Image 1 (spheres, helix red, strand yellow):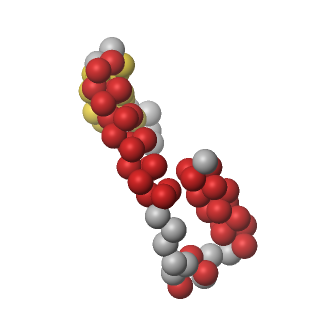
Image 2 (spheres, rainbow, N blue to C red; image 1 turned 90 degrees about the horizontal axis):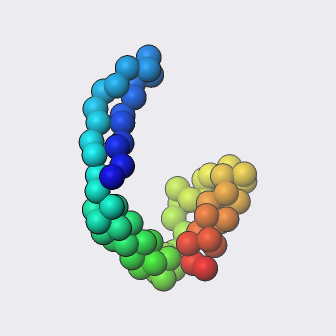
Length: 69
């Protein structure tokens, strides 16, 4: 069992949920599958992606490379 707590900037607890192991496994496998599907598609660069500063483009490429691996 895992307890997830949303904490406000002032440190007060805003919300909390408890999640069992099975739910975590299902959620993780779903996210992992979505990432695999997204990584398999090679989208054309968009104008917004080209407008990013150099450091942000490099960071984006690093993340995409990890997803594709």
